[in-house]
Image (cartoon, rainbow, N blue to C red; front, side, top):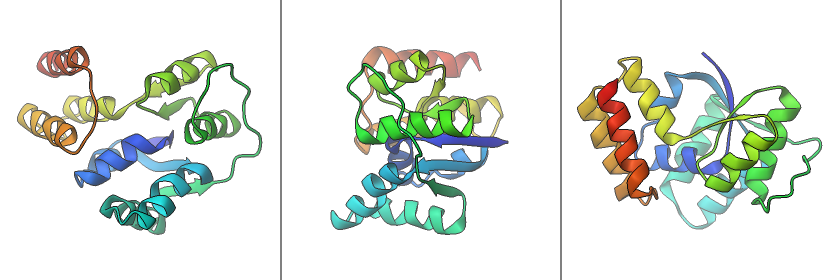
Length: 166
């Protein structure tokens, strides 16, 4: 089990469906930038989002650690502040993997030499490690989508095909 730097989306949606155990079975610590914390906790609490409180609880427990970014990386892609700070923090800490779901963020991660992992990776890895069953995988995937997680149809189909192979 290792550490990973995460952007907002994977944390928000796993909190919405109360499945942080899927992260805890893969990582001993999740690191987020101050910008991501502001986006998901501070702004989330202002909007009275229940997931903001769950994420704040994980920060208080020490599972999620908030770090300030020293220097932002330079990229030609137009990234959101959270995405840019996530990639910058990973580079700064020498952590090669980042949890990021957005296509642009994943592309930028690859460009700067990072390995992007997403929410689907977390589900599939838990399935591979036999932490969840295939039925659990399908239920969790559908709960994510019901909670607003956006997924292209072809990615949804690929994820199910990969899960069947596992």
